[in-house]
Length: 208
Image 1: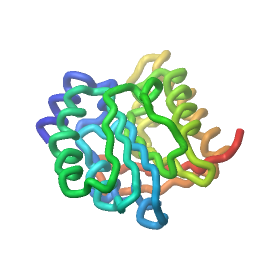
Image 2: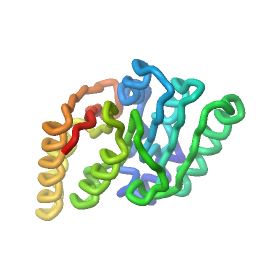
Image 3: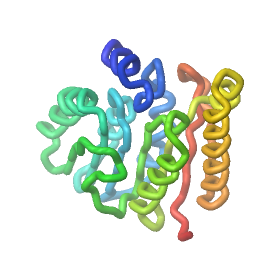
Image 4: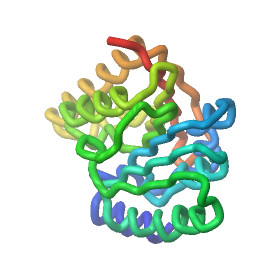
């Protein structure tokens, strides 16, 4: 928890929260992994301290391949030490790789059956949001799914206390999210047992 808070204070744009995601949200974000057969290729983008990473690792099976992309060097070291390295020692038959990079430039190749994303999109400029989604959807397999989340009503709450340019950016991000939802068979699940409450969003691959 202190690790997360220190990175939030020093780099709020890329962390985007004051509290790590809880177990209920992690289970919702990784729900499709528990239903799918294998072998599977899984990508996680923006794991932070690794609440989703830990849940994904619990559900990996022999033959699966798991790639993690994180831009923050501190989180990369934490994820490697706390989650990935111990997992590799016990499961050498499963490929697990960590990439310290923004997802736009990450050296990963699709297709991935499942993508789990923890990036704080409401903190980013709209062109960057569009570019990140374009890259992730481009890496998604034909029958794959992409899960991301946002805090409930975050854009509504931020709008009155932010600058006019920031309000404009929030409206553009909201419009883009709604467009993705329409074009990619989107579904939304409210997770109240998280601090703060969050909405898990799932998109399906669909040719443009």
